[in-house]
Amino acid sequence: MIITRRNLLLLSFFILLSGIFFPKGVLARDPQPATDAYTLIAEVNALRANNGLPPYAINATLMAIAQAHSDYQAATGTVTHYSADGSRPYQRALAAGYPVGGNLAARGYFSENIQAGTNLSPAAAVQAWQGDAPHLNTMLSPHLTEVGAGVTNVNGYIYYTLDASTPSGGTVPAYTPNPEETPNGTEVGVLPTLDLIMPVIISTPNGEGKVVHEVQVGQSLWGVADVYGTTVQEIRALNNMSVDELVYPGELLLIRTVATQIPLTPTFAPTNTGLPTTPFLTEATFPTSEPTVIPVESPTEIPSEKVVVDSSMWTVLVIVFVALLMAGIVTWLSGRDS
Image (cartoon, rainbow, N blue to C red; front, side, top):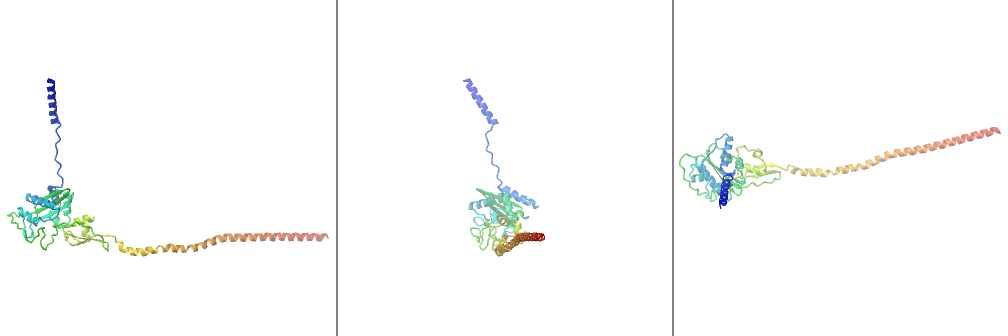
């Protein structure tokens, strides 16, 4: 009985030690993915620093409205600047109690960038926004001072919203929805150029071998260049665009010129069809080469025959001459004896 108690005490002691020296595995929190709103703001502020501008100050109200708008876009599966009630970015800020500065008739000192994509990182979103002046101005404006960002991830498809503004320092004007706006946020008679991003569809070369892209609503130079596998600088150079020049829906952009040999192929065809005539011409010279072989062989044979005939004739003549000479000698000798 005493031994059993001692064993139990020892076992309890070892269990206590195991709890101290071998703690249970604690479920550590996964590191925060680099697709959060604060990482996006850090990327924007790094860009501002590289351009000699002070960083944006983070504003809680702007953070809230930006996050709410990213959630709305993710819920509807659209990339748009409009809310469900048709309100624009600066109007959402006013409704949330943010004192937007500037002339509100011109939408005030407020600018919004949106972007979405599969596994899109904050750095890639900032890079995309550098493709045209309006998006770049949101990040590098010297007149904007505060910022908010929202990020929503739906199964790897990430929606980014960046709201930058400058407060008025006064009271917040009351926001009243515009009755001239439709529920989807499109003003009557107005085409929103950045409120809906249409996908870039690659154009095929035309009859002159030129690839021409027609800009659609919400498309940026960076997005067009990325899909076509070129650069913003090359597109600007081909279209004689300045660095401050914007693109607009319906504008035709020359992307590249390809297959410049296509118009020249008809001229190559007659040349190629004429090439077979050359072998025929060379073959026509073959009969002229055959007679040249015959004279080479005939001189070697004909002179040899002549040499044989001449030598035999001389032999016969010598024999006849010798025979006649001997006959003459014999006749002469026989005449003397008689």
